[in-house]
Image: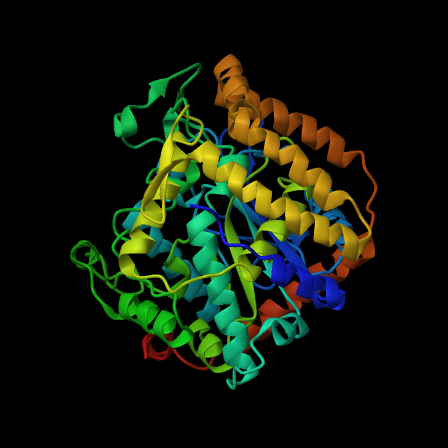
Length: 522
């Protein structure tokens, strides 16, 4: 079966080149602070960075040592990458004796007890965030929570959706835009496995992070490294973010209201395993926010999320339902170990191409059975994506990965040709041609390259070598778009803002939690 023809949509783009003038992109990079020997750092979040609760650029995720470097959104690809690189430069210039881990799968762990949960101060908001993380620890274990990735935030302009929509569609703009993004999400589930195929960079894991050495019949390599010979992204496998508790969540992608209601169902439905954990230990300490399948919306691990900026006190569910989908968060990117900042411009140009194609191509409604088949395709790619003659199901027809991949690149090449005419740049075409070779030569994929290096050196040795190289490289560079003065202003702002939040609390945490949970679950 051939992929849908999008010639008419490409002609529409050519006639209205300004449709793409408002593309916005932002990047979030997670990375562990580590000791010189490769062990996870147990030190507190450096005060020179500011306060992780309120700093918009330098914060923490699950653990105190798990940095999250966040860029604002920009239209210029080069600028957003310079911004991200400046964040890395600042961090490493201010880490005297520590490194940052350059891989997705965790560094050397002595035990889960060495993973200190992120701390955010004494405010109710801080306590809420810390309790949520405590719940994650009890539900899934800490080592799974420090697996790192890249989140790529992407949005089209309102003008794009206005021109693309059917002139006979009488719905309001909010509904049209949200429906457009949901169409992209459905196509992303159908074909987004191409992203871990090309860019997955986690075919192995250190023994210290592996709870079950027999899972998937993994092979043992050098210096405590376990791996699967044809894997692309163990981060996206059941070893990583996708666990048994969430595999049965029935997420609906055919309309915004259905999507929100399916999330609400998981937010309100207790799970026997989490009931057994309980809400408090024998000393009265809180163990989790609640016993439901999802404590809050963020707990849903997915490869793509519809997103909306929220204001203080507003829940994700309320915001997205009232105001619609604003942008997409692409969550299937492993840390790119072949660049100091974890992502390369080649990947951004490809993601642009792919997401534009997803927006332009047909996207039929998706039932539960099709979503299940799509997830099976993803699972096959992340575990065996480079396996010769491997096959996946496309429209319920078995096809080779190579065959489907080449068909997809045929379509992406046509998009690249159109973008070349619009932007007067060959970048998209060059990237398309470069990456297409990986379909026929899987050893050139990021995971294929990682496999060779990992088998040769072992994961710890190779990761440490990269960490030291990138530390030297980034510390020696000057800032490009952010100044020392900017960093100091943001540090002071984060300290001042955290103090304001702490001083504004009027409720006890018990009452705050009850109120917040009621709002979140209603």
